[in-house]
Image (cartoon, rainbow, N blue to C red; front, side):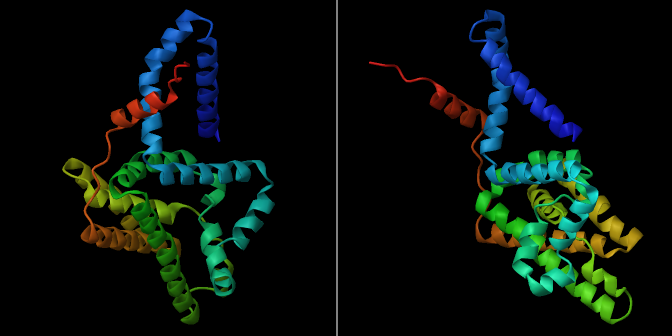
Length: 261
């Protein structure tokens, strides 16, 4: 919540500064000096539209979770979960709605935003929006379905209680790990080494240490995202993204008022 509040406050202050800059010269100079950075930020956002649109969606759901009664949110996330009960009755609805919620009432929102706005946005610029969405879907949908199959086997074999069938399993993490592994796949040099280590610590190690079905689900989502990314790259190579400065310059031209004749 604090992260969102800070971002909103910065946005409000920026537009107030621009408004003051219309009548006060020092504010105008400040706006011009900062516009270099805000323009680049704007260019970064518009070249990864799916990433930032999805980040806005799960941020909104987090605001809802933090402001609504906890019992209501628990009920909603259970109803919209990808648990076995939901998948067996309304699979499409369960898969769609479960991806709109941040797990544990929005815990770790700042980390999610950082990963999406930096790593996954970087990947979308290179894969392109359609391919990035396919990678996300493979991680979320295939990862959820494979996890459900493991749950069915665990319940039938007596290794897990029947209550697992109605457990709460929502969140953007399957989409996040699929997007991250797609980025790591095309990283180069020390970034690839750092990315592989981060995925190993964040995805593989919890499976070894904790042995939970949710940790296994993250691993399965990662593998599905990796497989889809590799397949898409085999079909077509990476895009060469337009430099952010060029995008910024183009946006600036569009914003200029046209002369009146």
